Each structure stands twice: as C-alpha cells, then as structure tokens.
Length: 88
Ligand SMILES: [Zn+2]
Image (cartoon, rainbow, N blue to C red; front, side):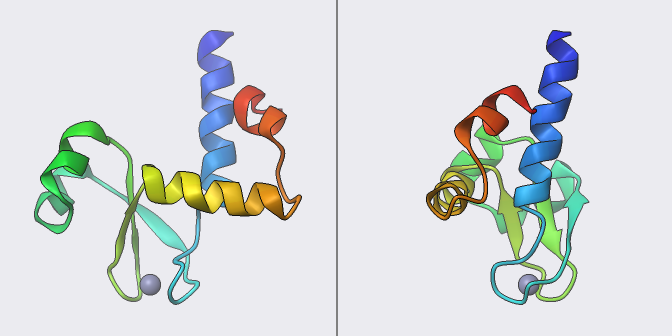
C-alpha cells in the first residue's frame, strides 16, 4: 500500500507539472544520464526525475522550482495539499 500511495503521488505531480512554463508544450521524461551537463551539479546529485520540453529543450526537475509552481496552483485553488500528500 505504501508503494501504491507513492505511485499515485507521482502521477499527481506529473499531472500538475507536465507542460513547459515557457512554450506550454508537453514535457517528456528524460533519463538522468542524458541531461547531466544541462543542470547544476547540486541538482544532478539530489534529483532523480527530469523532464524536458520537446520544443525549447529546457530541462525541468522536481526541486524548488516545482514546489513554487505547485504553491501557485494551490493558491489558485486548483489543487489541495491533501491530494498532494495522499494522492487521492
Ligand atoms: Zn519549452
């Protein structure tokens, strides 16, 4: 059940964070090894999940930038913390 909850949590994050903030294109999941030179080393060392924009090539990860985006959605009433934590 713990794994299942984590899976749902990950899906919720992906639904929120699935488009490029610059060109609004769908982001695609990329392998960590392929973007090592595109992200700061402290990010590479601490983050395992990355997405890239198919249009501009910008790389996104679920770090501070994501949390700020999530907070903005939350402040707009689009998501709630209970969804984020429980994946419901
Ligand atoms: Zn883009």
